[in-house]
Image (cartoon, rainbow, N blue to C red; front, side, top):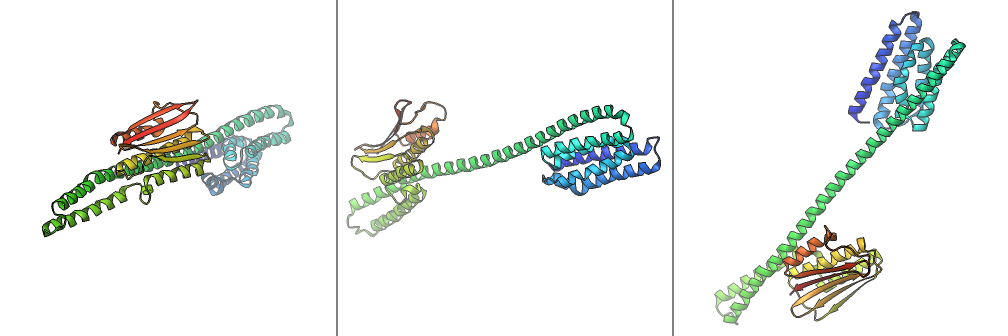
Length: 372
């Protein structure tokens, strides 16, 4: 129970205790001694709540001993002042807060039997009406207690759900930030490679064409400066490129991805290369590698495939990546498309085309072609 809720419960019990104490004091027809005993029993219940039950409710702890301690105090108050039966409105909810549901129900039955037993000893003739009242009180107490327990469980489940949603939102924000940062790094790496690095290479080539021996000191200085800046730009490209391409060629990086896919999913996945392998611009390598990784991830998560295949095909003017599986297929034009929108965007930025064919009968084939 939260602090605001416990304060409301404190106020409720305080009102019940004060109202009963006043009623005991002002009611007519009873000598002072029973009044004092009844008020003392009410005070004992209040102290028991403040000293033990309240702390247990706050900490969501259970104790049969604390709950059972209310029975003799209640019996004492009712024995000297039958009016104290109204204390049931304060006692019964405590049972459900500090004991399991079944134990609380048993305590409700027991506390409602106490007035019946005491009345049976005092006036056996009026036992019938007391039994009816006890039955109604027991049923009402159990219903209220079950409702309180259900509300408490529902509140706890909502709190857990809110905590999970907050954690999921934070994780989604983190992943989105990382994905955005990775995309931006990839874009910058491609821009640096395709502009600065190639520009410095062209400067070096043009100067050496004019003075192959670099006898002119100014031209030699220009070449050294261009080479230093070319090295710096390549270092920046390496730092910004995907780690899988940092120490491996594109075919090796794709091969590693297929091997990892088979190891993690248990689905056999073949990989082959056609054509003459050659170095590609960084942007093209990044787009092809990301497409292979994303496609295999989709196969693992959604396709329920028995086998898959990856082909990297080199031609004089382009490179194609083909990923096939024999899974259940999907609707390529559906919103979201298993991350295909991002794949299409990267292919378009690189001047390539992405084609997807999918059906439940034939599985899925992804065909990405990048000019390079």
